[in-house]
Image (cartoon, rainbow over all chains, first blue to last red; front, side):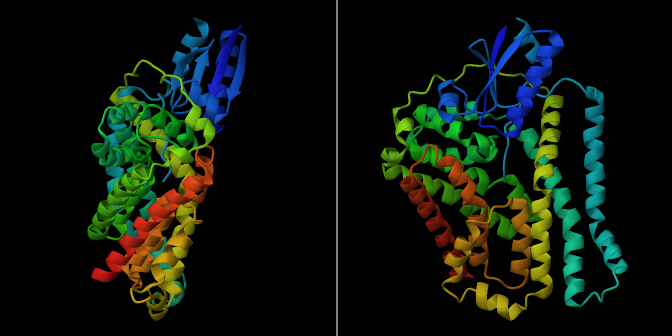
Amino acid sequence: MKTVKVYGPGCKRCEATETLVRDTASKLGIEVDVEKVTDAKSITMAGVMSTPGLSVDGKLVHSGGVPDAAKLENWLST
Amino acid sequence: MSSETHGSMARHGAPDWAWYLGVPVAAGAWWLLYTQLIPFSEWVTSLVPVAPDSHTGEAIAFFVYDVPKVLLLLTGIVFVTGVLRSWFSPERTRAILAGKRELAGYPLAALLGVFTPFCSCSSVPLFIGFVSAGIPLGVTFSFLIAGPMVGPVGLGLLYALVGWKIATIYLVFGFSIATVAGFVLGRMGLERYLQDWVRELNAGPPADLPEERLTLVDRFRIGLEQVREIVGKVWIWVLVGIGIGAAIHGYVPEEMMLRVMGGEAWWSVPAAVIVGVPMYTNAAGVIPIVEALLGKGAALGTTLAFMMSVIALSLPEMIILKQVLTYRLIAIFLAVVAAGILATGYLFNLIL
């Protein structure tokens, strides 16, 4: 079980990122708990400056756009 | 304009060689289309059963010529800008600005504001990210003003539709307003007017993510993605703007334009600024209007003020920033930028 957080105020890219995370996880057969963090304060506290940002199990792995599908697979499976 | 952050695209789709071949071919096709605009628009206009020198005929000619021209330009500019901006990121910009002394910071921030990709939806985390890294508030404002004010789409279209002289004037004064307004705001000691939680916030250290290595093809992909996103979003504004421009071009009598937007009427400059604030459109939508206004003899200063106000002072942007700025700070910010725009407007009405 992986805990994934998507940081972003709710723009199109943030939604695209969330969808991508869910699709990739189900493709890999990994259980994920996806949380969307939309509050500006929490986004900033996490160190994300350009949204959407992404953290896996508490570790920030990406910020500034919809992540690369191949990299996402890598983050989720390790 | 609304600039967007970029991310690396999924590695799928066309192979590299197709990009190396496709981009030059597309550029060639673009150029060919661009040179055929006048014959094309004349041909289309000739199909419409309206006398070409009537009001309606002139409006139709303006519309038919401007729509393909602006859309072509928009596509080209957004692609090139998307590719260029892939070398910049908000994180890198912050690192550059955080290390600079304050005075050099203002023009540098304005310059980086033009090249750094960020979408207005992430302006809040960006704002806090800058301020918490020790970048002075005024320098941060310079960055935020310059981004939309001297964006490449506005400049490129102004250059192609109105001419290089006015585009250059716009560039110089837009850039100066961003720099000077940031400086003035920085001198005012406005930190106390940030929202409480922002002042108390000790933002986490910036995420130390490994730099992504991008190949040229990745950058092309980013450019194309930008075209899809931005052109897909703003084309409707472009059509509305050109429609308004066409109506002005065809129907508004010149003497009326001179009375309302001529250099004689002192109130025309502030009125242009006030009208511009609630107008929320992309630079691509406003420049056809500017083209038509100038063509009808509107004063340059008044028109510049209108354009700057529409592009740089936008209500939705202010509402987003409300999360971090108090109303008081927003009002001061608006007043300082508007003062710069007014000064520019009056200056050009006076000297021309």
